[in-house]
Image (cartoon, rainbow, N blue to C red; front, side):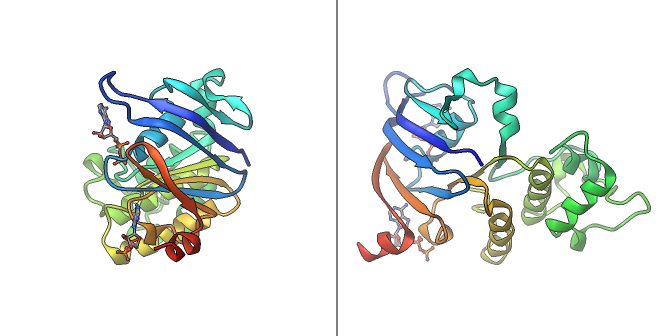
Length: 229
Ligand code: ADP
Ligand code: ADP
């Protein structure tokens, strides 16, 4: 696994307003750290910086000790499996959408990933395997089904780092629990950064960081945070 470090990271989208005001934390290799906090606190900004949609203004982000600005965008993104809140699928077959996780993967691997993500239940098997058309932007699938496709894609990609940005926030509570279980299986033993709105969805994290107005307000395990309330 790969360790992630944020060292006194500052960032603004525009010079008038600083969004991250010196954020430092570490995700040790193989562990799960969750960032929670109110809307607008800067949580998603942290995940965008790790994926390098933007560069930090000051401070630095390292993966295994290496500044991510010194890693090519391509190899950084190859190391990270990102599951966003709303997965947008290609208007193509389900197999195509899953294989996107690792374009060279063979049919058997794609099928195995689909099974591990428990996609079986909603796909009509065809002689070609998972050849079902997903439809325009995946609109034929429910939110939970789309997240399962994202999970299958991630299983196939087998990244060192998992980045979950509100991956279950758009789902109803029953589906949310199912997808959370699936995500927990994928994250086991993998360095995982979770961005979440509610504390109750990240109970199992090794550390929870509470972000407020771009600063770390509190940190600890779920039990530690609850004991202080
Ligand atoms: P539930 O999902 O069961 O409604 P929450 O996880 O939202 O529970 O909240 C559990 C407790 O943690 C509550 O006291 C809530 O106010 C507090 N809490 C939840 N999220 C945050 C957060 N991001 N920052 C600080 N406190 C929080
Ligand atoms: P969170 O994930 O905690 O809800 P975000 O990281 O998405 O918060 O956003 C933090 C702040 O940055 C918010 O005030 C938001 O309006 C602002 N923001 C987010 N994206 C942009 C952007 N592309 N341009 C300008 N401001 C942005």
